[in-house]
Image 1 (tube, rainbow, N blue to C red):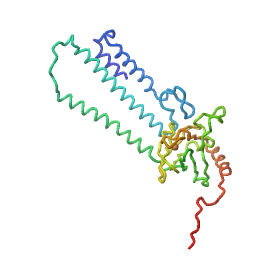
Image 2: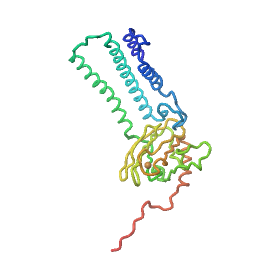
Image 3: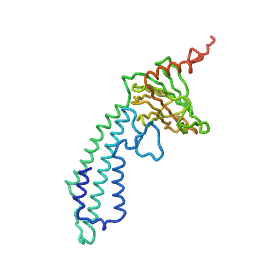
Image 4: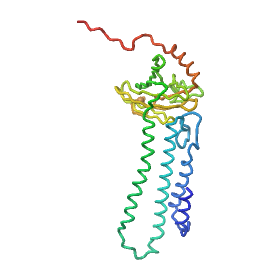
Length: 299
Ligand SMILES: [Cu+2]
């Protein structure tokens, strides 16, 4: 920032601001505003993972994956702003230095090998610089080999089903609360009758599939987004850092009620989670012993 600012003062010293067109000044002001607003991570942090009215920036990170995504995002944003400011300053300089009144006989120069090599190599190097942390992050968020527990998530038109194979394989459906039934403190279009419950600090492996069409399991504050494909299992993971309720939504166009199958996840301390498991086993007890009943074939 300081370097960019000093570079700006150095190259733009001869320009008097009153001589610049208003549109150029407006663009410069916008660039500075964007830098101040978005380069500061977590400036608009929230208590729970949910969208807020007039929200700027991404939702506050709640998992190690989202922490790294936010850091990577900030790095890219600083790079983008620095490049944009650099190009803007160059353009302003060229507009002023080579204006018709000060430069009545234009130069006929059309090629410069050194400059052409530099403006090809430097962007390549910048891309390589971005690729290294990008691949590292992709592999980090891909899957968790050392998970503490597994939850199987099944998307259906238009609700989610959560299975807990590590705790007796109970399962239940999670259906959005209709707007008319929303109680104070609940969020319309985001709250559900039964939340996905996980312990704080545990590495949770999500095995994801769908029952009918494509759905997608997307929780912004976790940095998690995976497509649920019928007949295929996709995997992702998260480790919630603090207790709270975190919201997500289906992000694959899956039919007329695509917008009405939200994801609500409640992270609670381990002892409370154990109590919840004990109660859930009773509440969601299966009526039959076998998951699939097969008809006998007569010979
Ligand atoms: Cu869906």
